Length: 249
Image (cartoon, rainbow, N blue to C red; front, side, top):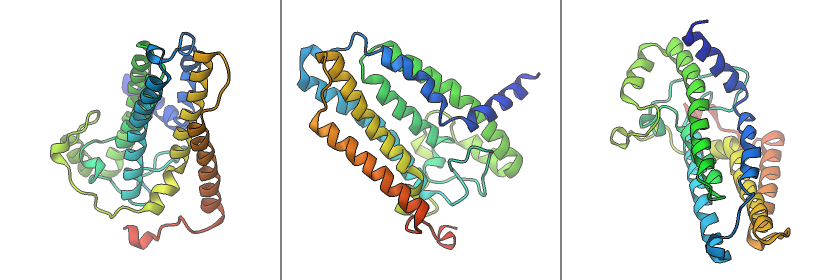
């Protein structure tokens, strides 16, 4: 099998399972709590550090929300059965980076990896994201080039794949839509907040030897569950989050 064909097949497989494969790193995250303790023995510093980590992850969430709220329908979706792109995104976040959603995912993962203050976990997570998304991006770009041809090649020529180039930024072609953003990203928002609520419990368990729920993170975690269930209901049972296709073209 040619290397190009191997990359394409691997990318297609990873694309379909991209929502679940990061869970393979979960045992490593749990293992990193083995020698966990409060920074300098201070619960106050622990609070500061966990919000630094949370902030890193939320930057990734914010990027995903912005992207999802400014792209046309039929693009940048959560579809897993196969590649889909009704049009080629080249403005907004896509004017400075070819894969902004994956960049956002990497920031989310990095925030989680930094939580336990081990040197190896962020390194492993970043390398895993690089290898993981490299294969997916290869398959996606293969699909986009086949569908959009010269338009794609021109965009890819001027737009970096890994690190954003803010000098070439162009405003989004569509106005931001909260409906579109919430419909696509309420999963991510809820999962990240809930994940840090769980990380806080694990951190306190490792540092104090007992299960204790912090009132703030307990409230945030509960709010995340309510937010998720509410948005899921609105998406599945109502038209509140529907976007008028004519208004998004």
